[in-house]
Image (cartoon, rainbow, N blue to C red; front, side):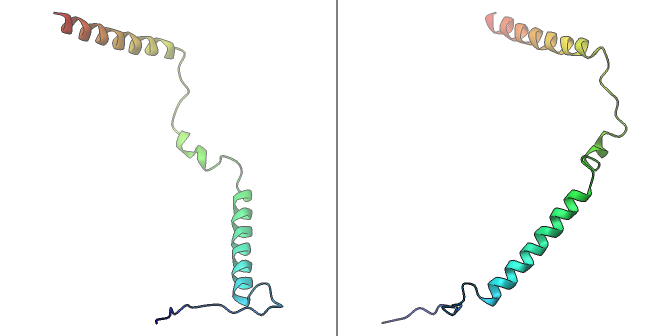
Length: 86
């Protein structure tokens, strides 16, 4: 007959949580509060908008570029169709 060695944490019947659990809980709550405060200190989108610097707004002829791209796709499909029917 063998037995298994298990590391256990003993808690008194009158205690609901051990000292280790209390300490871990306090540390996690402190980290969560610090992270939450840090996230709320930043104005919305300030860091996220850095990638937009140096770009310009879409011009008024964007519809023409879209039409050209669609026409090229249609012509390519027609070319493939004609090449396969010959």
